[in-house]
Amino acid sequence: MSCAFSLLESCHLPCSRYLSTTFRFSRGWYQMQRPIKHKTLCLCRNMQTFACELVKASYVPTPQTKPKSLAKVETIGAFQKLPMVMPSVDIFQSASRKAKRVLPTKGIANVAKRERNRGAKQLDALMKELAVPLRGYIENFPKRIYLHPYERSLIELTFGAGNYEEVLKKVDALRKKVVSVGKEHASLCAKSLSKKEAEERLTEGLEKLQEIFKCEGQAIDDLLYIAKTLRAMPVVDLEMPTLCLVGAPNVGKSSLVRLLSTGKPEVCNYPFTTRGILLGHITLDYQHFQVTDTPGLLKRCDEDRNNLEKLTLAVLSHLPTAILYVHDLSGQCGMSPSDQFMIYKEISERFGNHLWLDVISKCDLLKESPVVFITEDREVDHLELVKYRKIGPEGALHVSVKNEDGIDKLKKKVHELLMAQMERIKSKRIQDNIEVA
Image 1 (cartoon, one colour):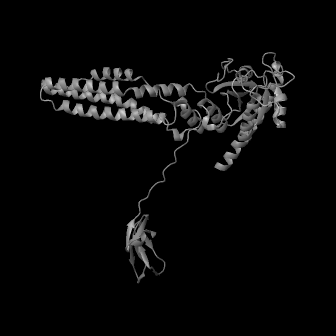
Image 2 (cartoon, rainbow, N blue to C red):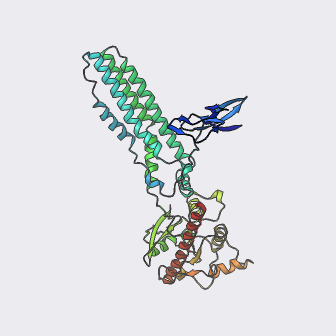
Image 3 (spheres, rainbow, N blue to C red):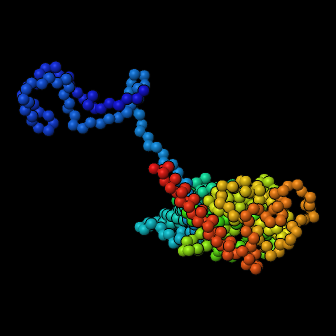
C-alpha cells in the first residue's frame, strides 16, 4: 500500500479558539477584519511530498527509480564508424617508447627510492598505454544485437556465427590481463629495497607484459582484419531506391550491372564470379538510385546453401529493394532452364511483396527450339515449365548486352520500377512518422 502526504499534515497545530485582530505569519503582520475559527494553523513555508509504503503499520519510504532508457538500434552505416585498430606490434612499441620517457618524481635524494619510483611509474604507464586503446576498441565496436538486421547477417556470413563476439571477448580478456599483471609488477617494484632489485623488478615486469602481448596479441590483429573487412563493405542507403539483381550463377547479372550503373563487378564465364554484395549507382533525370549485384542462387534448400547464397537472401530479406530477376535460357550459364524455373518459383513466392521485373539475358544466343539438358525430362506435363523453356516468365524483357538489343527498353522499365520503389519508401516514411506521433 502506497500513499503520499505532505509536511503540511505532519506540521500543524490544532486550534479550537477564535483568533482575533492581529497575528503574524512567517511573512509579516496581517490584520483580520473579523474573528475566524481555524481548524489548523500552517507553520511551514514550503510544501514537499514523498511516497511511502505501509509495512506492518509503519511508513517506509519508497525509492524513486528512473526508467532505464532503451538502447538505440543502429541504422545501416555502423561499419563506417568503427575505430581504427593498430596492429598489436605497433601498440606495444608505441606504449614502450612512451613508458621509457617517464621520469621519477623530482626531489627524491635516495638512489634506491628514486629507482623504485621510476620503475613503478614506468610499469604503470606501460600498463595504461596498452590497456587504454584496448578498452576503446571494446567500447566502440558495436554489439551485434544493436545492429541493423542486414549488417548482423553480413557479420555472421562473413566471419561465421559467434566469431565476431569471440574476438571482442579475447581482446577484453587481454586488456584485463595486462591491467592485472601491470599493477602487480608495479607494486612489487615499488616495494624494492635496493636500486638493483628495483631495476630487476622493472625488467621482469616489462618482459612479462611483452610476453603477454606476444602470445595473446593475435586477438588484436584479428580485430584489425574484422574492422578492415567491415569498413570495405558497401553502405546501402535505406532512403534511396535500390534495384537488386537476382538469379542463378553466371546468367549475366554482373554484365547488366556494369551496363546500368557505375558499378564495375568482375565478369567471367564461371559460377560465383560475384563473391559479395557489389554496389553501383544510377542517375536518371537528376535522380540517384542504387543497384546491387548479388551472388547467384543454386537449386537447393536453405540449409545446404553456402554463405554467398545466404548473403543474397539476406539482402532480399532485410533491405527494401526492387528485384530485377535475370534468366538465361540459352544454356550458357551451366544451369538448365528447368532448375532456373524451380529457383525462380521459390524466390518469387518468398519475396513476392517486392516490386519485380523479369529479364531474359543473352537473347542473341536463343534458338527457335528451347534448350533442354540431357539430365532433363523432355516430355513434361507442367505447362508453365514448358512455356518458361521457350519464352521465360510472362512479361519478361529479352535483352542482349553483346548486341545491345532491348537495352533502351530495359533502362526505361528500370526507371519506372525505381520510381515506384521511391513512392513506397515515401509512403512507409509517412506511416512511420504517424505511428511515432
